[in-house]
Image (cartoon, rainbow, N blue to C red):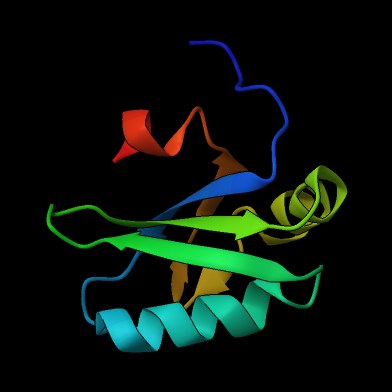
Amino acid sequence: MSEPEPCNTLHVGGIPDSISSDRARESLYLLFSTYGEVIDIKLNFRTLRHRAFVTMTTVDSANLARIALDKQPFFNNPISVRFSNSITNDL
């Protein structure tokens, strides 16, 4: 599978199922806003693998966040951060 093209939406995997969607959204906002303005956070907690899509204002800020946060701990769980193929395909 090829790497998605750089875009301003990031797919975040590895979100622990022990936290609520409200807490995840708030924590992701605080974490990602360090690297630029966050426009939107969409959560998918309907499956066993909790994930999120974080949309930032620019591709540059999304790339900074991707580089800095990939494999970093989030509630003691390493998260994966990559460019999203598209929200509709990944949800």
